[in-house]
Length: 320
Ligand code: SF4
Image (cartoon, rainbow, N blue to C red; front, side, top):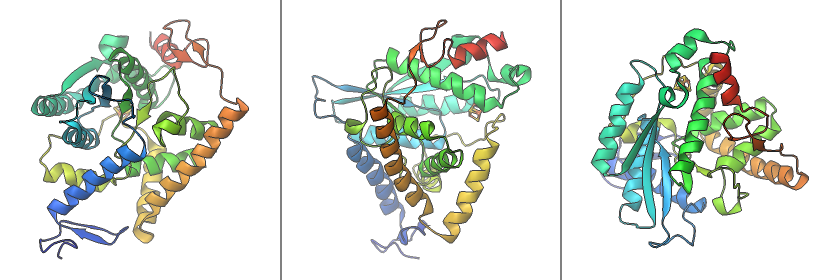
């Protein structure tokens, strides 16, 4: 099959758009979607200048998503003195998994010449995920512990690195799954939080002084296209499943979406665009009604929380 835009052989077909694209035009199309999202979400504020540059910290796991995002943002802003990129990798302490992906992060950041910081749960909290899974004092899934620790490390280090923005490599599939899960779980406050934390134009999101704002510029690109892009560009992405992966419900939603997308191409795009509109309305209503929970400082670590002791400190106490 020929590319729709030139005579070259197509390397991919997107059923949701009907496009057949060759390697060159496919790469251009992925990069264009990321740059368009950066513009639409107002990620570079007007006040940014060479004298007043912005620091963007990218959560760099070494998987295909964060590697592709880092590569495209680097190519977009390499000559732009208003934006400085920093890669932040978290080592959870998972034998045979994170060491390899850390190598991918080191290779990529050395190749691109960007600053790279590595933080481990062991240094931060004195725990390794391999041991947490063995102990499991709260009888929870591994990802429930890991997610709490990761959010804490990302937020704290984004502040420590003086970040203006914390970027993650969530793709279209990830975001459509999260949207569907939030709706099916009926958790309206979670929908509002999801919007305020990472979706929609930065300039229209409520200024949240307590947190570094988040952004997901890869969220218009389906997972398979991210993987193909990483492969075609021979990026040093580490493709492996975490041995403690335990998000069974997300797996069910993922399978459901695969089926829907096959029978009704474009489903993920329509879920996400409808969800973002809905989430912006819900978030606004929550702000107007003052329905958001009161925030305070954790008595143990001082981080912002809605409880006396934050979830991370409660989990660490249980593990101790
Ligand atoms: Fe942590 Fe779960 Fe991700 Fe593994 S799959 S790194 S346990 S959140």
